[in-house]
Image (tube, rainbow, N blue to C red; front, side, top):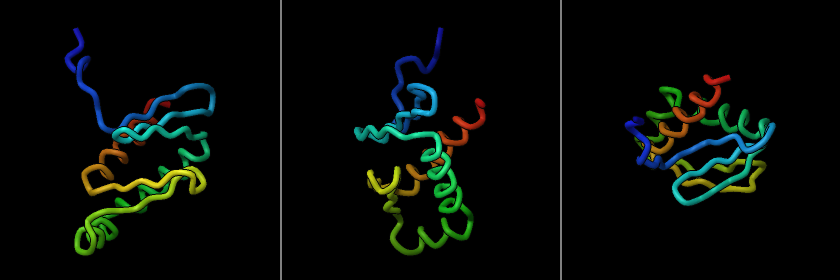
Length: 95
């Protein structure tokens, strides 16, 4: 029996087809290609570095992030930013 079978997470990344992914953040669903996922991972890794996180926390405590060639805009507070980083790292860990 799966313990987390009835739990829904705020951030989910699913592979639809070859090089086509679906990112769900809260109620917003975005379709991304593999290069866009790589670019998003690079942005998130930069934003969650120790210095940048400290700067974000001291100033505005949130990040506005354009993804998928400025097709989508995300408002991410620190916990969601870290959740997104964890979801992306889990996705690349499975490769």
